[in-house]
Every structure is written in C-alpha cells, then in structure tokens.
Image (cartoon, rainbow, N blue to C red; front, top):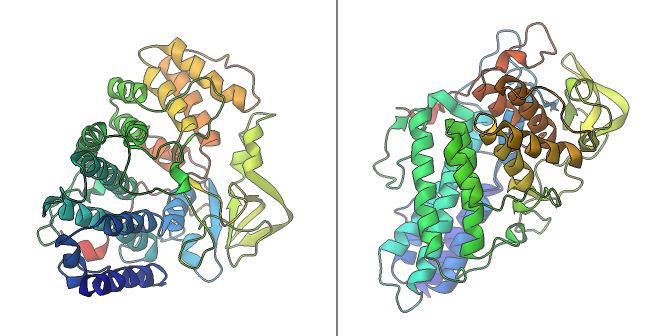
Length: 441
C-alpha cells in the first residue's frame, strides 16, 4: 500500500507541475516516492513511468517551436500580453535574448525534465533484479526506447543553445557533467542513439508497455529502431557526416516512392482532462492575444502552384502588432488534437537528398524531385553543382518542413542567417540562445 501511495504522490506532483504556468522542479531523484520504484518495479509501474516520459516530452513544445519559427522568420508570434515574442525574439532595437526568461528557461527545463524522468527509469532497471517481472529482451527494449528519447530531448535543447552547448552527462543528478560544446554534444547524442539502437536490436518482439497512437507502426522494438536510425540520420547531417547519414537512412523508415510523406512518429494530443492539447493550434482569424502570422516572404518566394502553401490560411482581415502586419495565419494543425511530428518521411527524403549532394548529385536530384512532385511542382532543372543543389535542398526543406522547427537550424548550419528577411530596420537574427541563468557553469 505504501508503494502505491508514493506512486500517486509522484505522478500528482508531475501532473501539477506540468499544468502550472511557472517553471518548477519535478520530484527529486532522491525523494521517497521515486525511490519506492527502485524496490520492486512492476509492469504496471513501468507502464506508468514510461507514460510520464511521453507526457513530459510534450511540455513547452509550443515555446520551442515558437523560438525556432520566429527567429527563423517563418512566422511572427503575436501575444499582446507578452511583447517579448515580437521584440526579443526578433532582435528588435536594443533587444537581447535574456538568459532568465520563459523563451529559454521553459523549454530547456522541460526537455531536461524528460531526460531526468527517463534516466530515473533507467536507474530502476539497473538497480534491482527484475527477472521475475521482465525478460532480458523487454529490459533491453525499454532501455533502447528511453535512450532514444533522452538523445532526442538533448538534441532539441542543443538546437536552441547551439555553440553555447548543453550538458549531456546528466545521469547522476547529484554530479552533473559540464556544459560541452555543440560538436561534443552532437557526438554524445549520436553515441547515445547508438546505444539505444543496440538495445532495441536485442529488444525482442514487443515493449512491455503500450505507446500512444503517435507511434502507430513504430510500437515494437524492431520498428521503433527505424525511428532511432532516422533521428540518427538527422544528427549525422547536423555534424556534416553525410556518409553516416546515408547509412542511418538505409536503416530507417525512409521510403522514396513518395506515396506517404507523413509516415513517422508523432507527439499525440487530446482534450482529456489528464492530457495536453496541441500547443501549436490557434484558430483561424485569432486576435493579437494569441496568433501565429506568416512571415510574408513565405508566399513571396514560393513557386507558383506549390500545394504546400496550404499550410497558411488567408485571414478575413489583416492583423497588426508592434509594427508587424500580416494577413495569413499559420494553419498546419487544424485542431487541438492534431499530432506534431517528431520525425517523418518527408524530412528523411530531404536528408537523403542532402546526404547525396556531394557524392551522387543525380540521386540528390531524384530525391528532390520526389518532394517537388508531391508538392505539385515540375522537376528540378537547375544546376547539379553542390552550391545549386544546396540552394534547392534548403528551399524544399523550407516549404516541406514549414513551422516544424527546422528553418532556423538549417540556415544556421549552412551559414545563411544573414539571408533571413527582417521586417523592421532595427531587427536582427540571433544565432543561438544563452544558457539559462539557473544552469551556472
């Protein structure tokens, strides 16, 4: 009975924190409610704990995407109650990115909470004899999934702080490792994905817990391994290791027939009292109280007939805030229950094109034409030299992955931040966020 009371307290604390508007800490690793799981972890316990990881991985995602989307000049985030979306993030006059403000502290803390929760479970798996409850394969499968999630969450934080780095050695909450460079962090993340892949490969036929509908088709160790390899391909591309990216893609769910660009793994949302709604949803014609307004160049730079322009919707009337005026809403997610992609086939095809630009430009063109064809465009007729193909690849990524958190990262890794449009003379483009003040060094 005592253990079940601890369990209820643990998840009540977690849920209460997640629905709070303020940044607070999750239950400490040393608290009794978490220690109780280390005494006799049951199948029901594990299911609940993994469910907590899936839950916390969705917290503050809206802020993460707004950080990337606004600085990457995909859209403007209007919030009349908080001008920092249209001042700080856009680099307005005298603006700086504050290291103690919601736009970095909230997503940063949320991602590390998920890492902490996952590491907590990994510790439970190591700290006791579970042979009576789980097979070795089931333990391996669980480790592989959790290691993949830890790697992915670390990558999202690194996307924000970039050359300022992140902590990757955080398994021991009482002895955190140092903040490491972007290069070292990518190496560490890739190594963690490799460890996860090895565990998934030895994970047997099934996980000892269910996954959400967002993992449909990827809800066994062998099928989730394909998603692990897909994320690994993204990391390798960020490292500039295109040979490794091609190898990872070969082991992923990449499908070049163009029949379903949306196959992949997703965050699921619902309006249930114990769940979360999609944070990227705003209704069409929303007011300045809360709206995402397309940056005009998205339409201005587009090719005629591109069906991906349906990701924005013309408003009944234009809207203005802080000297920014627009008349198109971002409308990728039609409801509060729409899923958000973690990684999907359309990105994999574009990664495949990118990874072949130098080594096999003809294959890169073929992949780009799959994307163009799906968007209703004619085949590519430009140059096949690396510079021309990189231009085309980045253009296709801009429209295929619009408002999915990639544009800012893409132009940054190709040294093109100065090519992003500035709506106001005093605006600027920041390359990265500062490490949160609470982290210290």
